Image 1 (cartoon, rainbow, N blue to C red):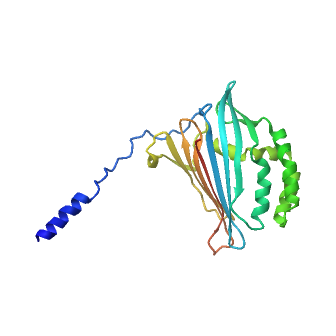
Image 2: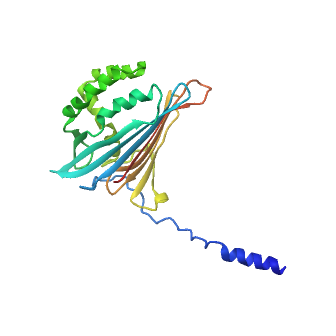
Image 3: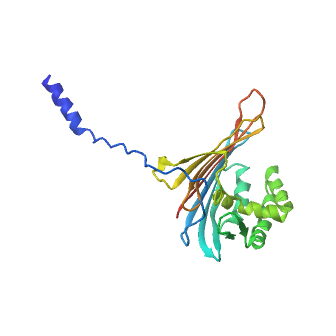
Length: 259
């Protein structure tokens, strides 16, 4: 009995102190609309990763990293976005040409002009930026050993100016998706208590299975103080029949943090 009591006492004394469970912060209701106030002259890091299952059972992974710097520009804002790195971790015949085609974009800086409310966005050096990379992309894709790679080159050459600009702006535009806008009925909105920060708002898109071939599900974490998307998760599923469950077509993750 005495030995058991001693052992119990030693166990209690040796155990780490219990951590107090912190209650979630008391936050006001999530705002229905936020403004746009990006941090000025502060380098931000935008990381993007995606994966796409291939027909042979393998998965192709892509990673990109941008440096973003906002600045004051008249009544709005300027944004310099530099692609620091982009590529894939694959080593097969499909991954190699993709990595080569992304290489000419690395180190290039895109210059944007953004309205004061964050809802308008224009690429200032789009023509020069596209010309700097398009020729290399087309030449590289022409040497691709797989048909998919060669098709990319042909598609790039045929793009009209509006689609070229949309392609160059796609990653950045996602970070401004909710700036100055009302949350619509498509989203479930709540303060982000998981991060213990009342300034963050989580939005989950209400997806409805309407029988379409492509199903999408997205979740965002938005900083209500700046209007910028801090985190974005996106999944796309393909339906191949009425009875078989959908299969994953792609998955993407975007995160925005101080550099």
